[in-house]
Image 1: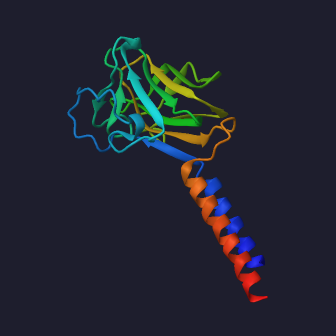
Image 2: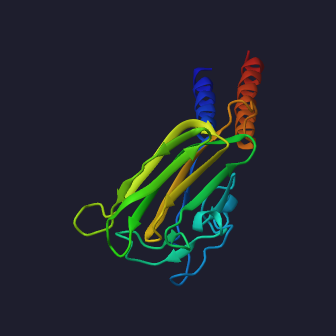
Length: 217
């Protein structure tokens, strides 16, 4: 029974570890020209092969007057294939919304300045639910003098159903390598289907072991 108990514990631990996953959005698989718009649903529930199937993603640029960002291939520090706001002097935003039963507990992203330049007094905000991290005004790296040639920002919380990243107000600030952690909503009280199947398998093994011992007595 000791071996069976160990197996059951291992299966349950594997199920628990599957409840927290990181989604990532970058623009590496886009074959676009400079100035091309990025599709408004790119990364939404995993569209385009990035993001996470449980998280909705939307974009806004030019301080909210557009529902898309623009694409650029290089010279944003050491970042390549980045997104930026369509209008200079405005803010860009990427918003995240978790499906029911899930929460966003962290966001992380990288910014760099074009053309291979540090850009001063930038507005950088990350928010998860009611928790807001404001990194303003700050200098975004991008020149050759300082390594790494980009700046990274992040925020961790207990989790919320929505989050956003906002940056600007210079369209020469590009974003890349956006990641976010997705966790099960503890108030939901219902394991994900994969965990239910895993638990059923573990309990089935336990029952099989019990029947086998009974039959051999």
